Structure formats: structure tokens, C-alpha cells
Image (tube, rainbow, N blue to C red; front, side, top):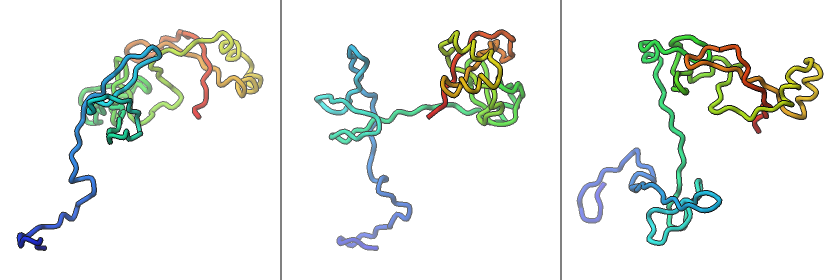
Length: 171
């Protein structure tokens, strides 16, 4: 294909509309407020607020991303890593959790590891100890009463119940 000056040009088959543009990235400006923090545009001379998922009038968008390192199953097997939930070594990709590792795929759906302890409730303890039929009726209104059992740093259950809380269904 020839352009108007006579030089040849090749058409890029894999061309997409985003490829000719460059992207500049910079950490946003954080402005402390009495009710939290306001995120401001780092590119404009007069900083203005920017929100995640919305383009500002200057064209800036704020991206918030969660990043987690995945340990491939081969590396987990060679490093003899054991899962905190199922207590098995290898068996798939793993991710770091607290002082140990857990499988990327949920290997023990009945076991939940909590990042921080929940707010314990006396009422949850009382409901947890009710007979199964009565408990199910009450849990329809309050949410499921759940016991929190202690796990040592190696991932073994100590048998000690730390407390009880209501597990709310995800909406």
C-alpha cells in the first residue's frame, strides 16, 4: 500500500484502536479530610477529585487493583509447602496466607480462614447450641451462627473455640 508521498506502508493486521496511544501512570495525590481521604488527579495543575471506574473531565481514570502472587504447583511441590486448610502438600497452585500457604482452588470448602477475627456475639453462642431444628428457624432471621476455632501458625487446629459470630450470606 502506498501513501500520497509514494513511500510504502504496511498495514498492521493486529491493530487495535488502543495501540497507538501511550499511557502515563502516576500515584494519585491523597488529601486528608476529616471524614477520610480524598483522591486527587496527579496530572492537572489544579488537582481535582477522581473516582474509581469513572473518567474525569481531564481523561484521567483511577484503577484499583488487588494483586496476589501465585505459587505454581511444581514450585509448591519442590518446596514441600503444605496447605493450612487441607494439610496436604502440593496438589495445585498455592497462594500465601498469613504464615503459611493455601491452595488457589478451594480444597476444603467447609473450612474458612479469616483475615481478621469477626465481632463475637453471645447471642450467636446461644443459637449455636440450640437443637438443629430450632437453630435453623432462628438462623433464617439472624444469619448462620458459626464457631471460630483457633488454628496455630502451622495450620493445625488447637481445639479451642475462640468465640461465635453470625455469618451473613453474601448478596
